[in-house]
Structure formats: C-alpha cells, structure tokens
Image (cartoon, rainbow over the protein chains, first blue to last red):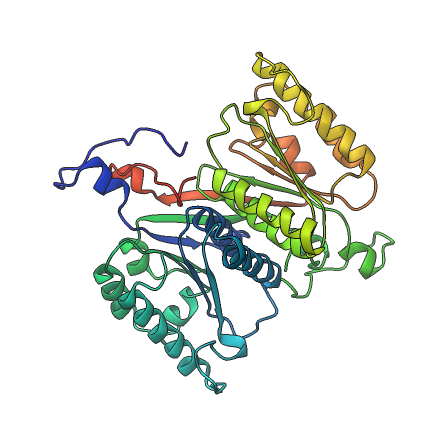
Length: 202
Length: 202
C-alpha cells in the first residue's frame, strides 16, 4: 500500500521528509505488458503534482504509444490554458528528435543523441519526471555506455525522477535503481492468434 | 511488439478483423508496482481512441490514485470542451459510489453495489473501457461471486474491454482473461526505509 510503514529506517542521516522526497530511478522491465503503460500512468500522477514531464522515446518507429502521446499532449495543453497540472514535452527518435532539425540515419548515433539531450536536461533540471521509454535497449546494445548512465543518474541535481522502460534491463541499472518492477507475461491474446488492436496496443 | 504476427491462427471461424476487435478481459496482478498505473496508462490509449472510460475503484479509501483521477477527469473535460478523446467517468467506493446518495457502511455490501453497477453498465454498453481497480479483492474475499463475474464478462454485449487490477487474482478469473500480466517486485524503496511520496505513489 502506497502510504504504508517502511520495513526499516535506515541510518543515512536523512530526515523522514528528505528520505521521502528522494528522487527515484524507476525501472520497468521484463517480458510482459505494461512497462511503458505504467510509466505513462506515472506521468498522470506527476502531471497532477505539477511536475514538468519529459518523455524520450528510444524506439525507431513512432507508431507506438500514439494514444499516450496525444493524451499527455492534451494534458500539456490543459496546463498551458488553465495552469492546472504541468507541461509535457514529448521527444521521439523515430521522427527525428524534437530539438534537432535533421533525421539521423544511424540508430546508434540517434540513441546517443537522445541520451546526450537527456543529460543536458538533467543538468539543467528541465523536468521533474523523465520517461526514458525503451531505453534499456540502447544500453543493452552498447550504444549508450551503462557507466555513463549510472554516473549521470547518480550525480543528477535537484529532485528529478527518472523512469526507464524496456526488456532486459542491464544488471548495473537494476542495481542502481530505487524501484524495479518486472512485468511477466502470464497470458497474451497473441498466443492464441489475436493481433494487436487500437486503443489497447497503441 | 504490438503489431507483430500472431504465433498461430486459430480455427475459430472469425475473420482477422473480428479477431482483432475482440473485446478483451485484461488482468494486472502480482505483488509488484504498476498494476493500477498500467491500467490508467491503458485509459490514455482508450481516451485517444475515443472510447468512453468508466473507472470503478474498489478500495475503501479514496486517497490513492488522486493524480490519475485528476488527470483523467481533466481529459474528460477536454473531451467535453473540444470533442477530442472520450468522456471519463470515475466512481469510487471510498466516498460512496457516484450513482447513489447514501454511503454504505458495510464493505462487502459496498463492493457488491459497485459490481451491480458495473453489470448494469456492461448490459447498457455505457463504456468501452472499464477499469475495475483493486477488484480482485472483493472476489478473493467472497464478497462478489467469481462465477457471476465470469458469466457476466463472458456474456457482455458489443465491444467492451475490461481491465481488472489487484493482487491474488482468482484462478478462474486468470483462466477466463485474455491478457494477464503479473507485476513482480524486484526492488522497492520502502525496503530500505523510504516512504511513499506524492507524484510517485499517489
């Protein structure tokens, strides 16, 4: 339960409030559904808390997550118009990152460019919630150096929460993360021949 | 990947399109985080697809999910004002169900009243996505009859998707569901003494 008692109180010199407000690194991994979906669900909470949200999609195709993108962008507009909630920025590799004009042909370079921007944003404290969607893959494939990721996360200033999704999270990332959930497939309609459908899969 | 090929094509007499549009029963269970969060993430997709969304929170306290509630209600307002997306209805047991005036003291009766309304809404095809949050518990505790749940889900008309969240999903519910994901805790900050925080846990 969200507001339950912790199992033990650590001897870390922090007050309960400091410990409570500790910025988190959250990893959603495993072969099951819901890794990204839960990350975007977290973004709903962040929006309501007034935290600026930055989404970085580390996938080639921008075909997926369109439902989440439109809905979160709509929430960003609600913020612009009424002040309710928080701003939402959505960056995707598949269509060229938002901050560069050119489309990078090379996948690895593309992923590194995305990570370089995340580093700049973390240093500038641009957002309070980062969703690094499918970011486990560029790490797994060695396109982005896991040591650089850990070091950057460890040294990030202020109160910036980072959610990383994707299968096969690097063991060092799991080790560093504060909260790791593994989504396991128990049963999936594709197993019995059903295909994905709008509204459910994208 | 959402739009991948199914492993086998079943001999069920349905066309690919009929099979693709088959309404789903989705269960998010297990001891890990993200069960409800992923359900609310799915609601973002449904909203973008123009599907009316009905959320039923089967928990006593309405303190949780406030972030999701405000954000999804804001999206419901966007729909009212612009026609974009879909309407959102949010019902919670903790504050008395939206459709009744009185507050029911007895938990079991309260849960049964919620389920009775879900049945009425399914029969009337009120929504296209139902989020029955923490609904595994009233089933587990015998407050709501699992056979009635399965029979109702099996016989529901039209194209209505139902997502049920909570630990310890009843085996018969898992058996009936089309898509079941188990969220497993790998690591949680409460294990090392951290408490929940706004924006992350609620």
